[in-house]
Length: 349
Ligand SMILES: Cc1ncc(COP(=O)(O)O)c(C=O)c1O
Image (cartoon, rainbow, N blue to C red; front, side, top):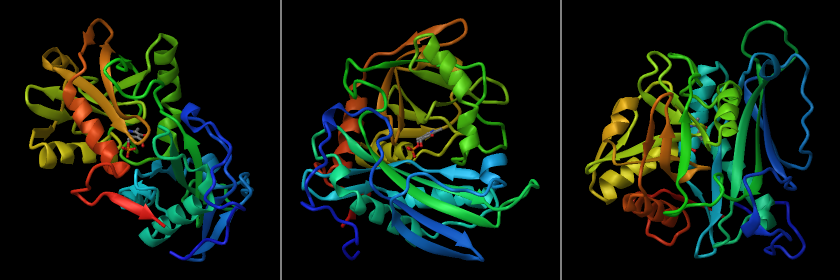
């Protein structure tokens, strides 16, 4: 890609931020990327400065939740280069969602170009290698227009903002950093609903269960399947993983978000570590037989679980060194301290 039009005097210098102390919070960066879909074509506005948006009041995204988002990270590698992680998978997932919400897909080329442009335009805000922080990249998609009926929009905004972030669960990763989760009596997604796409509405209905879990001292809510309340689905904004004997397990369900981190971990388990891996239903009661548990996602990376509290039973789990192996390999691929056998790093230059 050619050099962006946006630059800082002293280009390459870092913004005056305490990168190692960052939390998972929004910090307004100078530029965001935007494209508008109108009359059947995407018009690229490129990197713009205004972080506020001016939307028609009848917009479908405001009334009927015609909205999607993605979450990914750009990290500075040990070699000083900038890397995204499997961004084509995010491009595919947002377009899967767009088809489901009856809007236009986002061409992969537009998605990748947006990620590259917004990253380079905000270069001083990209945390340095070794700071423990990353540039969080938030692409999102809104149905807009002068409308009042319940129907898909004819115009769309695709925007990407970035913000430097620290760890999602305070404390980062390590044998002392296990988290406790509470089984929720509520559902985050309906069977045959929108749980498998990253639509904002799925998150609105997680606020109440999340607040209840946090209010009683847990890191997040763990959801069960919405049909029988018997099988484990996922945790807040992270998928679930378990180790049972020599097998790495993850739930199979049509109502969880297909996590790119999870898919990567399952592939690492199978192809790099040569473990047995299985994607299948995992009953809550099967926790009796499970040796170790964790959750994973772009924000959570791999977070091991020390406790799961059900309505009338608690399960405790030890730290398992296989979580460390997976964490080291995954983050090593992301930051170029490990080789990249499956071709997942995407250099931004
Ligand atoms: C509900 C939910 N599950 C799982 C994940 C993890 O997905 P990924 O690994 O693609 O970030 C996320 C985060 O995007 C999420 O919001």
